[in-house]
Length: 221
Image (cartoon, one colour):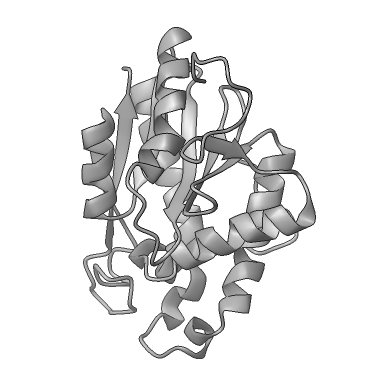
């Protein structure tokens, strides 16, 4: 929230995504593109078939269809969808008390099951039964370099959480993201490898692979 008295959104503010099909698809396409080269999501998306040149990788429509039910169910469950700088970046926040729902009609990939279980335990360990704000998804549209885009989507909620005396939780899936969040005031509480023995650090199938590294991070705790 800004303290000025203008009622228009500045170009640089975080703007709520309208709850209409066109905007939800726009939001989802930014997330799908932002995570297209993400090692964890590669493993979740392709499972033990994960390899460079997999035909699914060259079909953006499949990624969109993969992400849509997740975004929709989180939105219906009370999630907040935001964009900034005219879709340069988007974020999905889950407010205190809102659980991440699982779309019911799809089998859950083993990478997603492991991710959920491991981070569920870690959250329990650090947050106990406390309410918290959860930065569930955030991504920048490829090719968009607007400064402050990520900050716009994060800082208002850090302030809100601070006012409410609540912690903020996120999982970082790459080192660059981890460092951006550290800069914004988060700290790493735990490193987690997903897919150990199944995929390598890049998320490609490799027997005995070291798995994909992720970071559980918290602010205000």
